[in-house]
Amino acid sequence: MTKNKRLDGRKFDELREMEAKVGVVKRADGSAMFRIGKTKAIAAVYGPRALHPTFMRNPKAGLLRCNYNMMSFSTGERVRPGPSRRSKEISLVTENSLNPVLDLKEFPNTVVDVFIEMTQADAGTRCAGITAAAMALADAGLIMKDLVSSISVGKVGKDIVVDLDKEEEDFEGGATDLPIAMTPRDGNITLLQMDGEISKDELVKAIELGKEACMKIFELQKKALKENYK
Amino acid sequence: MALLIEEKTIVVPGEEIAEGMDFLPAKGTYRQDDKIIASQLGLVNVNGRLIKIIPLNGRYIPKAGDTVIGKVVNIGLNGWTINIGYAYDANLTLKEGTTDFVERNEDFTKYYDFDDIVVAKILNVNRAKFMDLTTKGPGLRKLRGGRIINVTPSKVPRVIGKQGSMITLVKDATQCRITVGQNGVVWIQGEPEQEVKVVEAIRMIDEKAHIEGLTDEMKKFLDVKNDKVLEVKNDKE
Image 1 (tube, chains in turn blue, orange):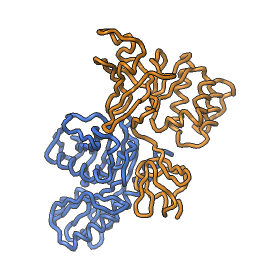
Image 2 (cartoon, chains in turn red, yellow):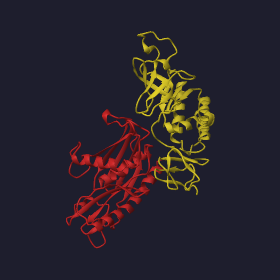
Image 3 (cartoon, chains in turn green, yellow):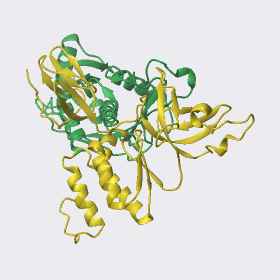
Image 4 (cartoon, helix red, strand yellow):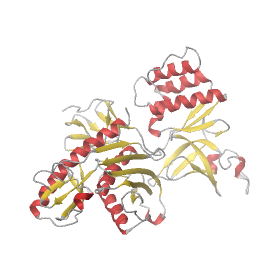
């Protein structure tokens, strides 16, 4: 880390190159792809459909069920296929970050399944997954108060940065990873996790930077959703 | 005070449509403070003071009074179970299924067998979305032959057109019998070559439902298909 440049030459508040596309999975009810740098997530939404096991059914509203999966070839080291402690946790936080905007009261006793597949991973996978899933849910025509945009912020060495990549996450001088998700309209935070150490002032600054970055992602999400119907 | 977005443009959830108390939020929108915000991906529609969203995608939500096309998936002791494209199947009771006197232990398959396609009307839907159907009424019957395609349920009004203008146009041009269910299931019967034309036409409506002047485009499309005009280079494709 030099004085005003990062390991890959970006500015501290600069995001990696992004790409978003809607309608990538033809047989799904809604789908989206989101790529940020070398991290690529594909989300597919199925439903509302019949929910099994039946004891999970809620007669007042539908259920959101997310499934995060890293494909075995997505990283340098092969990922062992199948559910893991990590993927279960990420599925859960994804659900929690999307649930506040989603309204499934029209579909009692049903489930909306979201499958998030990481085809390439280079840090910030849960954020890319949430961003893609939010677009896919909107594409499926579900009722949502707002979209959800997500980005990881953090501290690399002594600097507060936005959108860490793998190289920065593994920085020898110590790195803190802080994935956040927010609703762009109200600025409510729906996901906030942390791996590492950070001071109070730095945390506030990091979240501020993250919110700005989320707005940029939101613009891209909006564009991608509209472009699908050009 | 005013609309922030023009009518008939595409909005995404969370986008502000109007400001001030002059407008009222309808389907697909909600009010927050003095703003009306979209809660669904779709086209903005302003009807007087009401602002609603015409969704571009989404599953069918059953409503009482809708005419739907479904498939018999099960036969029970007192009627049939019919799949109409919602998460859960609908019930067609024996009483609503036929006007005949049915003997005890009679075989129900003589009315509707497994995999039969029926046009039915939704009698009522309760809070848990349990649906009762009826096949008593004009136009409600079992469908024989023909072919079935699916369109996005929210685009059904576009397939039918104003007072059935679009569907009549396609029917007249192809001499096919067409029945459109509110659940997005379309049944077509006619000469095989004509059926193919209808399928193409309806697929076109489904894809271009958000474009204006579709009826005129459909007229041109059908004329070309029926060799009424020489196929000119279609620069829109």
